[in-house]
Image (cartoon, rainbow, N blue to C red; front, side):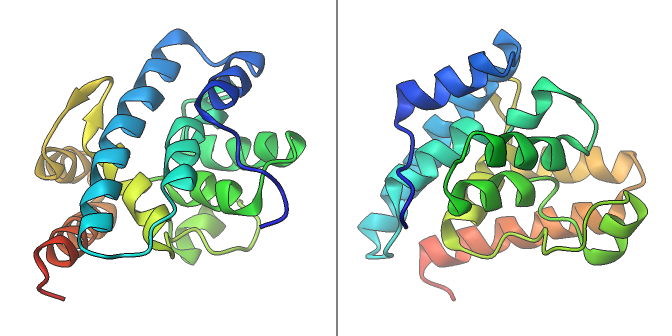
Length: 176
């Protein structure tokens, strides 16, 4: 990693500079609190997680909401993060946090650049999962997000959230 990760204050400054609303910023802060709690649980289980990356990634995951609140906020956020010269690890968290990842066929339908939009690293998965468990600033069970996606007829996305939930729980409970 050659570019330095922004700290908490720098991450919030980036959100503000890009004109994210106060609601988006408080949401990102709530996601960061939960993501850091999860990171500590993974550390306690001896998983090698980058806590600073998780914090910065969680704080910046919705950077693209400065431009749009559609699913395209992942791409907008990726582009803003690139313009901010943020580390690639942060850019990957931003572009892969939507749903529990966007598969290639969906990305093509959205006219997104060809790329991998499924969370790959444990840090990406932790931020993505924390985001699915926060509505506004309130914690919700992952199952509530699954039901919401099902109600929107987004069954594939709902299934990816369910699988991510099961993966996180199984890793933390040692049932992998």
